[in-house]
Figure (cartoon, rainbow, N blue to C red):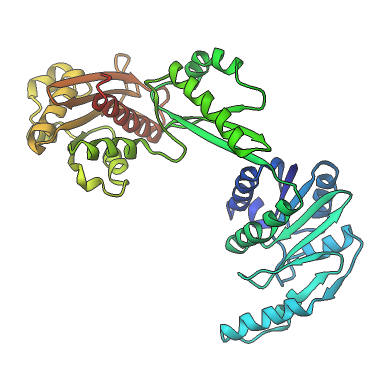
Length: 415
């Protein structure tokens, strides 16, 4: 089943409101085995809405409209729907009774505008909305289902999950779909694609794979649609088992896992502790670690040593190292990591020092140059990276995530 989403509202087109509704609807439809073929945003104007309806009706099996069902003059969706389906607005008493009860419970007086919410296109099936005053509207035309729901997110979500998707399932319009997202870190998308070329070429028919890169991770999403969920799931999981043979050192988790959380669980399970010394990451690495609930069990603290003086006074970095090699160097990174490990008396420590940008680079140490050191029981390593680009925030994020990956691999004894 192919679907199109039409979101309605001037506020979407001027950037005043981010269209989170379309993303949410697309995700829920996809989980129900409904393929989204197009997402369109149009203003609260008759002609654009009508044109979007006509186009969607020619290409999609399901059309979901959100927005423009309110009682004010700028909400024109119901009238446009009447024109498209050659019908008229009629007063719907059950909807009016629900509106009256809602206002009574809230001790609010009704106005004529509120009463207009009970004006419904005669040709539609009314979808009761327990979360608001505007009901959902269900139409069918030329083998295409059209559904209009309010733009208020919690009302829209209620109608989609409690009314629209159950009706589609009853009609046999949905299929089984299974998604599994493999999370990788420490390898560029292009390099990853090269390593996985043979594996991709041999994916079973029906299994789709997508690369989803970001500064934090490169996600590999495997998807399959079918009639039998257990069979679909079995096929996808078998391909993931094969995938692990190609890139074992780079996979750190699945789906909603976070590298900080995965690493933290490993420390907690081993009853081991961690401390951090940061320079170029400016506390962002500590932020990632402490964003995980329960991190106080294993994380003892950090030092953000942004100046050389603090590196010397709080971490014991030698003045000679700073003068001879510079703050961005193997020697300083190693002294930082050992300094914080000894002072916090922890099992593991991580240190970062580098040039985040957009200024400060030299031919020998360009913007994006970072040294990351990790230390554990009886061992210590330092690694040099040159992250491309002079975007400061991106370099900070990538440095912090890379530091966590090195820590994870050290805990696993892969370093």
